[in-house]
Each structure stands twice: as structure tokens, then as C-alpha cells.
Image (cartoon, rainbow, N blue to C red):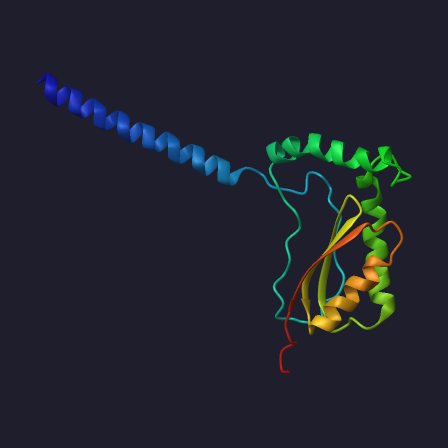
Length: 164
């Protein structure tokens, strides 16, 4: 009888452990993800309807806290080196990204693109779709010419609008 009791207890403990691990995994997946660091992210154009929608940068609160030290270090090193007039490079982003959007729209050459822009520490990420490599390069060159933009990361894919 003792052997059967131990086997039943082990089986019950195994199921309980598996259930607890499953709950922990479900909680981790359900943990709220948001743009806790307020990273500027805007859609600029919407000319290619088949271009996949780009996602705003999202993370858990724990991930945001984990990134806060390195962000403070990277942000202030710009000022300490004399490359930034503001005390933290991340302070530029909320002003740069709307200017990037305005420059792309005013330029007028990029109405047939679908572009989203994201900014972090004076770097601008171009995401979405352009109709050619030349067009993607032209957008990059335009954004690179904007005051206070330190770098441009061009992640635009090439895709023709539907029906072409």
C-alpha cells in the first residue's frame, strides 16, 4: 500500500508542478507590454497598402527598468563628450521624430511609400516599405540631413504598390 501511495503522491506532485510552471509561463506571456520608455514612433506615409504594419517598441516594465541604467549611461556620454548640447541624447527624440515626419511629407517624393519612424538617442530608424533601393536611399539621405540626427538605420524593405 505504501508503494501505491508514494506513486500517487509523486504523480499528483508532478501534475501540480506542471500546473504551476504552466501558470508562471502564462503570466509571463500576459505581462503588460507597452512603450514604457516613451520611445517616439510615428507612421509617416501609407502609400503601399500591402506593406506590413510596423509595431511600436513595446516591452515589459521589468525590461524597461533593466534598460534604464544603460540608457542613462549612453544618453549622458554624448553630453560629456561635447557632442550634445542637451544633457542626455534621449531628450532630442521627441522633437526630432516629428521633424523627420514633416521633412518626409514636405519633400513630396515619398507619397508611394509606407514609412514609420522611431527615434532613440538621436538615431532614427526607418521602417516599412519603399518602391526601390534608390527611393529608400533618398529617404535615408533626407533624414540624415536633419539637424541633431546622429545616425539613420534604414530598415525599409522594397515592395511595389498593389497593381503594379
